[in-house]
Image (cartoon, rainbow, N blue to C red; front, side, top):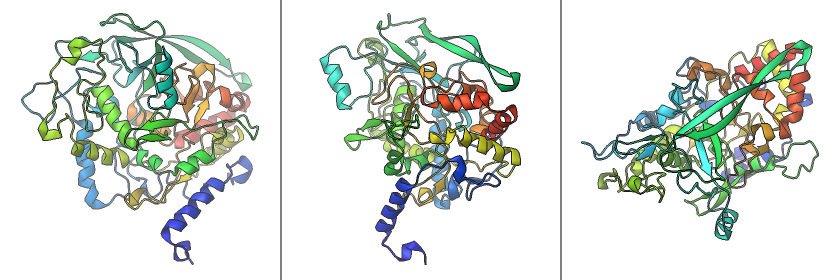
Length: 489
């Protein structure tokens, strides 16, 4: 008899959550590596799509999305692609850009809904990568604000929380991100070696005066957009159950949740989105990007001047696109709701070569190196009657969504809410093997410093140091199979 015939729906959901929390992490000894696990070929469960694995692989709606919602999905895609223009303009539908901004549309940063990349040379645009800015607390009041958790950072006094390198006519962009690299060599087993590039970041051509002497810079590339609605539906208890902040089990892994402020609920909640899990909900992620990246006001963040600060008086005086036709702001509630529906329902592609013997051997190497301790393979989403296509799905994101100390090599030394300057949220790995197909490049990590998957693994440190050393010392064939496994995700 099906369990739902024995218990009321709410009790069934509670029991399912308890089972999820009670399940111990899988180890190499728990898995039969001679064949795929049940459901593994569908990383998004029934929400996965089985369309072609081409450059549009990250652009399809969830496979189980109701037909009547698909038109709204397309309209939401239109909001995502909308090119915003400066005010005043001949139409109120698209005006309100900036005045300072990084991009004129969401799609300009998330090309093909894939991941961004650092500029390839001095002539390449940095539109899919930007610099977060903040300073340490300067007084008791700022320390209290951070301790209360209402804010995650103290903005740089003149330039705010993000460097905007572009501006509307009549203003200048704030400055230009500068990156230089030096190469270091890493010796691998069987006489192999790899070269890693170590980045150095600075800001040039500042147009609004010097930055604070204690400014903290954190480079960020835009992440892929797939499966975000599924990540939002993972029960918070299931994520928090994997946390071990004091490393009580002594395995060297001490993941912990970020606790971030949700202005909608008026309380601290589990952070899920962003490189440091600084956003609790997908809507908050969307509207924050609207305001910070494009300079568009919304009902949730009605600042028409975007990230302009009090020190940028001319920026604050520029015309805005606020309109009564759009709820008194530049992007109405209808627009943000359609954008939320779109971003919540971008499907994860099906796996490739899931039965390939080399891929299965690479999966075994993944477990033997302990990678699954942070890149948790699977979760089951919650039962949400309002989002049936995202409910009760066995998904395979390969992330625990927790913060981990990744060592000095990857540290940005910029705290965000509870995240330290050495901690990052474990990024989901689903779709990572399609990066070059969708995005046209193979740059990885939060700042795109890694030029391939091997380099990305070799940058791991801190809690992942033992796993990195396992990759370094494993036989060459195992290392190649490990990469094949990642490429199949």
